[in-house]
Length: 348
Image 1 (tube, rainbow, N blue to C red):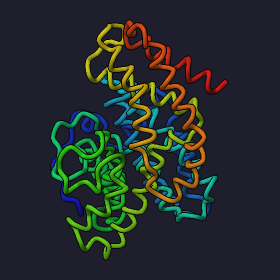
Image 2: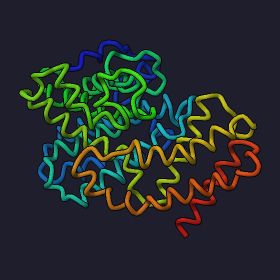
Image 3: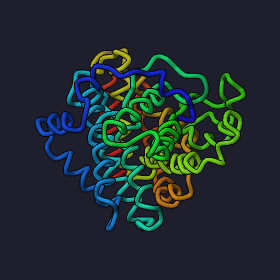
Image 4: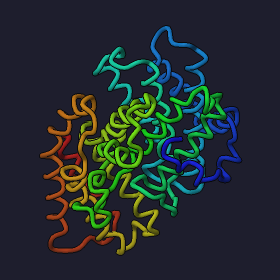
């Protein structure tokens, strides 16, 4: 579509194993039969009353197929578990965060089709997590590959690139905007991308498009995708404004995923320093420096929670560093256990 990167990433063995929504239903019925009804309920909530039932079914089917493929590729249904970027994250975004957004803003604040686009985003924005090839520009390789697969999922679920062009472009820009640059600021290279660097790309996606596709604002589909992309980025990173126990849990899951992907055993000494850095200084950097709300709606709903969590993030990070000030951690698991204890004390 408008970014021109979706053809760079072909399908893989997981797509071949789960070519359609029927295959996804079979897999999920054997592993966790609650997931499909939960997504159907989230879809019904997003659509509201009076929405076309066939169109609702297409959106739910795309969400089910996306969740099943992620679960098989990087979740508990396969053999390459990612503790954070898995089906658990799909459900926390699709159910808890999107549902809270609807309750807080009111269903009528967005058209039903926008809520349903956010549902499909929830299931598809993290489909790929191990892409080594990076396309030109600020969109990450994982996100670009996820866009490509999302296009194929949409086609498999009855969407047409011609008749449903707006849906394809909207999700293309939503997923592109979820690219999260965690490198320290100022950006170490690519000065021309400085306006789009640091944290979620959604905040700077429009500025980048101004340079690459200056006619994008005349395309209603692109304008919708950029607008919804900012809201999508906010629900993707809404852990900053959720209850402190949920924020702490997300940090622990991300830490375990990072160590697993790096091949570091949490029970060995080598994982101690990296876990300590991520769960102390790393959390401070994410919370106070990198994270910024991208939409007014996201800040309205989750901003107060972020303000309330700030002092706790500082206390837990300082307490964790103090815990290991005199003696380095024996291993990464010791750091995770200490972090969990300090976070629980904040909640109690």
